Picture 1 (tube, rainbow, N blue to C red):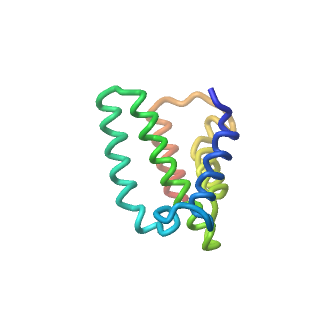
Picture 2 (tube, one colour; picture 1 turned 60 degrees about the horizontal axis):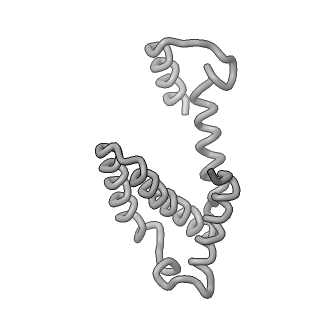
Length: 125
C-alpha cells in the first residue's frame, strides 16, 4: 500500500505539470466553474459504486473525485486564493473542533449526547 504523503505529493506534482506551460491544453483551460459539472458526475458514480458494493470501482471513482478537488485547489492556488494545504488544514481543524469528546477531553457519549454536542458546536460556528 503506497504511503499517503508520497502518493499525495506525486498526484499534486502531476496536476501542476498538467496545468503547467508544457501541460495538457484541456487541464490548463479548466476553471472552478468548468469543473463543477464533473464533480456532480463523479459523485453520482461514487454513489453507484457504493450501491453496487464494488470496492474496486469505488476506489477509482473516489480517485477521480479527489483529482477534481485537488485540481480546484490548484486553480485557486494559482489565483492566490487558497491552496490544497489550506483545504486539508481547514477540514482537519473542523474535525478536531467538532469532536471534543475524542480530541479535547476523551469521553464516552451516547448517540443522543453526540448529536446534541454536534448541533451546539455547529451553531457556534
